[in-house]
Image (cartoon, rainbow, N blue to C red; front, side, top):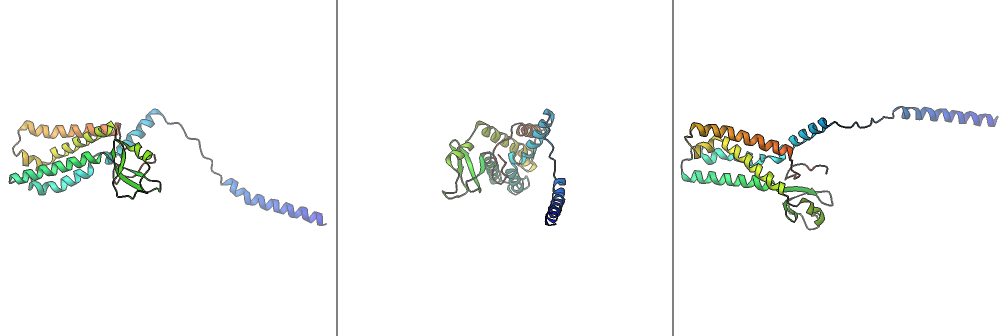
Length: 220
């Protein structure tokens, strides 16, 4: 009798174990294999990814500062004195320098995982956020962020975009050219549009690897 009861108990335990494991097996998710992407899909993905990075490549901060300060510096385009023209030129120079220099800024993570900001140099990344000596990245890691020829091309394109925005600003145009000819008006409309389109396409086709300051880091 004892052997029979043991067999029955073992059968009951086996049945209970089957009931416990059955829903777990039923909840298994079959992960489909990743389908290879066609050349068209790869090109489309690259295009959208490059377009999403335009905010990082275009001089948005400098343009915003210029548009806010331009009416005050030019007195709504009147430029009543030589001082107004001089201060407006100073504003243009500062914003243009900002557009150029920000193209060489970058950010990375140190050995503790914290984001550090710096400027790319020929020797590597120069940390400028006031980090202590033990928090900066290693020399071999910083060397990966050294200056490249494409950085200067991106900086020049950024300057051209800013120049196109300035040419569209009526306050600046009225300040330095109060009575433009008809040909000049047509050039002030057509040239900035062409420059903006060409530079935007260039940024999409040849995106920068720099993260700048204030933009999220990529996975790589």
